[in-house]
Amino acid sequence: MDDYPVAYDSYSREISLPIYPELDSIKIDFIVNAVAAAYHLARHLPLSSGEGQG
Amino acid sequence: MKIPFSPPYIDDDVKREVLEALDSGWITSGPKVLALEKLVAQQIGIDHVACCNSATSGLMLLLHWYGVTRGDEVIIPAYTYSATALVVMHLGATPVLVDSGADFNVDINKIRDKITSKTKVIMPVDIAGWPCDYTALDALVNEPEIQKQFIPKNETQKKLGRILILADAAHSIGASYHNKPIGNWADFTVFSFHAVKNVTTAEGGAMCVTLPEPFKNEEVYKTLKLWSLNGQTKDALAKTNGAGWKYDIVYPGFKMNMPDLGAAIGLAQLRKYETHILPERKRVFDLYVQHFSKYSWVQLPPHNSEHKKSCYHLFALRIKNITEHQRDQMIEHITATGVSVNVHFQPLPLLTVFRERGFKMDDYPVAYDSYSREISLPIYPELDSIKIDFIVNAVAAAYHLARHLPLSSGEGQG
Image: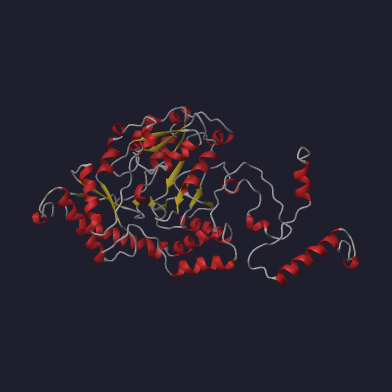
């Protein structure tokens, strides 16, 4: 794997999200919030920290 | 009257099962395929059946499992569908053709002469759903002289220690030999679920794993499932289960898996195969026998034997004393009445790819004779006695036209 560092970098930071016609804005909001919460949990940050919000 | 050759059996139960798969949100390999594997195994009376996307795929996968490769020979009938030979060629091995017996199936007595130290596999084919002589084949590959010739090239071949019997049972699900279903009689048996078969998944096949000791059939089943899905440790359904997304590829496998959508058709059909579809095919077959028995110019397909029971996949009629050209004329006349018929099969040496590899039709005279006089008639549950009368009359009229006999001559009526 060391011979393909860019491929590994992309793989190691990648998560594919659901994408199909039946997803309405409520579901998309739900997914986005789940991803954001997961990021905070994985980074051991408080959910209310707002880190990364533009 | 329009009579198709072999429409698929689609009733409300089939539609319901397919809709259930569609509504479930899962249409590729999943619970329906596993249920179909279990039901086939249960009906055949064996433990391990692995479904795949065609009988052709199954045959190729099993040849690969046995390590068949360049320099090896595989004995097959000259009278079969081309897939039996093509799977051998895909692996770089050489198909060795053997002529037929009177019942369309490969002549077991002629196989012996074709066995060499390069022979790794024999692939008998149950033409039209009529079983081959499996006990004779088994005895042949276990003869000490034949075993002595066998040169194993890998651990699997060493373990078996003889030529593998891989039954191409594309036609014969539901047939039996010595009162035991086909699927029990070879090292592996492959059924076809192609659209025109007695049981269909639109496209599909099933591999029956019945190797002798010391093989562990459960392990072989798992290997075949793994290899039929790219050598991937998790199928797509398992991968969708939350955190279980991570998989590995542990073998350079193939993409040969059956989808649930197709398995749903097969499941619904198989549930009523023994109780309805097979008896109905037999009814049609028996009616043809009854009608055609009165014509002296007809040679009926094999159907009556103490040890063999057909699954009535084809009604392969042969006409006595006609040429290939006259047979073709008969087909034209029959088709003109609205009845669709077919020919099973063009022997391999008649086809370009085999002719160019040096196979000559003259070397397989029985296969040519059967082919040149053969017409396959429609056979399926929806054919009532009126339609069967119509088909029989169309065939009889076509015979008279092809032979330039007056229709009223009554020639050949007993």
